[in-house]
Amino acid sequence: MNLIKLTTATIIGLSLTVPAGTALSQEKEVDQNLNQAEQNLDRTGENLKEAGKAFGNSVENTGEAAGQALENTGEAIENDLQNAGNAIERNYNQAEQQVEQTAAEAEQNIERATDAAATEVAETAAAIEQESNWGWLGLLGLLGLFGLAGRKKTRRVERGDLELDAENRPTMYNS
Image 1 (cartoon, helix red, strand yellow):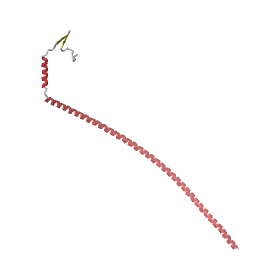
Image 2: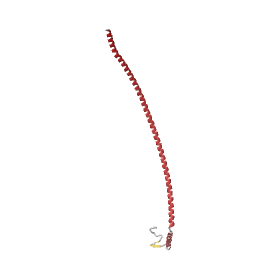
Image 3: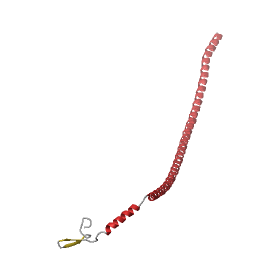
Image 4: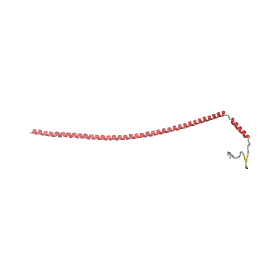
């Protein structure tokens, strides 16, 4: 009986120790899993910290890039305004020179037209004078002089107590 008791006690002991050993091994496995999970969480935290730093650097770089872009845009606008001002000034100077040149040409054209008109008038007057006979005007003048020579120069008109010469008589022309 001892052997049966011993065997039974061994079986009962083994049956109790095997599950306890299994439980102990499972507990070690759980501890390892927990340690692994803790390490994973630590790594995840470090990764999140690095991601935050990278995000901060990215935001900072983006801000710097935006600032540089604004600065470049401002410089480009200033350059474009300066170029536009220079172009306007050049156009104004060119227009002023063209106006002066046009005015000088117009003055020359007016002088040429005046000279041509004066020459044409002189030529026309010379042609009219050459082809005209002004002798008839002289004859009329002589006839007028002969008509005056035969008249009396003064004539007396008596009216009441007034004596008036014909030349001093009031008329509607000399009164």
